[in-house]
Length: 327
Image (cartoon, rainbow, N blue to C red):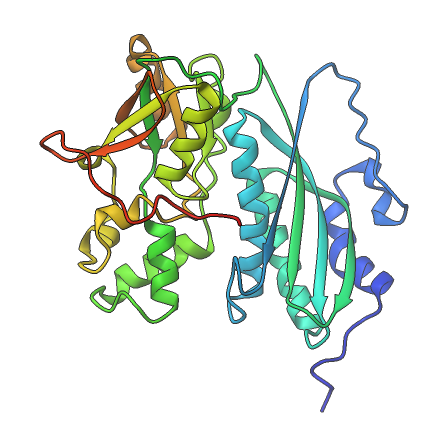
């Protein structure tokens, strides 16, 4: 029987699993050189972002490796979308635990290939190292701005509407389900939540379409309230949202042990949170419909600082936490 921990050397690993992912980008040179050529002579601005997933922090050791790879790519595509950019290419730095074999790496590559085909991106470089520690996937994604300037966090004005795409709280619910919690969910709801945690849906059509309409934008990774706080602070404003206006999935709404005040503080949703002037409401609605992405108006910005979450009677709720803290 073959040794299950047997693994190819670095150059063979790159040639077998990752060079095929770079075939569509001539300047990647089959991943045989020290760097890739972008060839950005078209006068279009590029946007670059880097995000990493660490085993035991951002994914669980028994998560399917193809899903882990796709999530690593998708969280970066979400960052590009939040800036109004369309993804073109990416690099991958991969730390591989010594006990992982070629089958695990092959599954990573299959996941990346699937999402390359879906989102029209190409691997153009990176690095692989073997280590005793946890698996780590660090993606640097490159995108282009097709028109106008980038969407920023600091552009909101007092009185702007606050919008969110999709539904909130599903990523946190999926993590709970993976940990054996959320016992009140049925099998369909549980699988939905786990899928949302493992495989977020970057809003790649919506983000670029919001350029010229949204005044500020970012994606929800740390939690709705925490990320709205980031946007409000960058814009020098306060913000308030009505908790009854925040959209939930059927699974999140069905979980009795997962109240709304916790859903709005959970991270890993990767939905777009953005602001726009009230006169743009019809435009936002049309953009969302064209992008095939549900969007809900949940609040407004105003002078001051901080974020308030109001109940149906307009009373501010006391939150135990506002979201994920990196330190």
